Image (cartoon, helix red, strand yellow):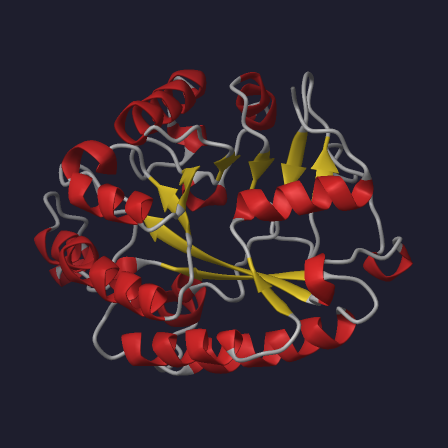
Length: 293
C-alpha cells in the first residue's frame, strides 16, 4: 500500500520547476540543536558503558552531547557566518529556556526556527503528542517572537496523526519525509501541508555515527550529490539539504571539512542558498499553489 498522504510522482515526468535567477539547485543547511534529559537514557551514544549496561545518569555520553552546545554550535555558526549562510535551526523548544544564548544568537543571524519537539524524544513515545506540539510552538514563539512555519520530528518520527495535528496548529511544512529532491503537497484533514526535502544521506549522524566514515566524508559526499543535482537542475530545479548536529560536525576534527563544504557550495554557479520557508514560498509560487490565509 502506498503512503496515502501524497501521490506517487516520478521526478523526471513532472512539469519543470525554475528557481529565481536561473539557479538550478536550492541549498539549505539544517542545524539541529537539541536537549537531552540527563535523567533518561541518552538519545544516542558514542561510548558504551562497561559490561554493556545502560546507565542513568550517563555522564560521558551526556558530556559528548553537551559539548555541542558549549563548543560545537559556536564553531558551526562561525563557519556559516563567515560564508554568509543562514541556516534552518531545528530546535527542541526547551533549549530556549536552558540555553537561551544559542537561540538568541541564531535569531539575530536571521536563521529560521523549525519546531523539533520540546525535548529530544520521538513523538510516538509521548503520552500526549498534541500537548507536546502545542508546548513546542508556544515556547518558541514566546521566547523568540518567531511564528514557527515548519516541523521536524525528533528522530524524524511521526504518528499517523502528526500531520493533521501540525496543520491544526498552523504548521505549513515538514522535513520528516526524506524521499524526494523537490517539495510536494501533503494531504491533511484541514488546511495545507508540504514536504520540504531533508536528508538522511547528507546527515552527519548517518555518515559518522552509523556508517563510521572518516572526518572528510560529509564534504566528499555532498560534492558528489551536488554534481548530480546541478546537472539534473538544468531540466528542473532540485533541492539539496545538508544536516549537521553541534556535537558531531562541531568536533575539532570535523569542523574544518564543514568549512570546506560551505566554501565549495558557495563557489558553485546557478546555486541559491535559501531557508526552508523560502523554498516553500518559491514552490507555491512556481506551482500556482495558494498560501494559507
